Length: 121
Image (tube, rainbow, N blue to C red; front, side, top):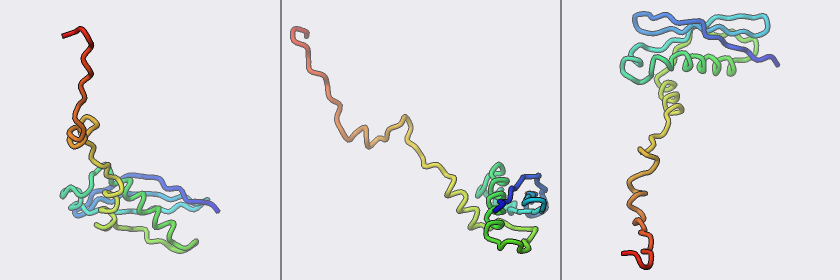
């Protein structure tokens, strides 16, 4: 089975959304898609501009995989708020404490002092 490859072509910004242009290649077939994200999602901080192409790429891959072989696919797609939230959740790194330890670990066990050497005061 031949798997489709997808390439990022560029983007266009409209009044209410940013459209990312992607092209799929399956054998000799080439199809162009636009996948849009609401500009409000960017301005509200729900998604970063640099994540837009990847989010749209992943959306198109899901659409291509879920469609039946040979079925006609919509050339214009929109990323939903739920899909944005899923992306952010999946790509957020858990916060780490500063210095590699937490305050609770530092207070959990008292520091041990080494035994005094005989003859030294």
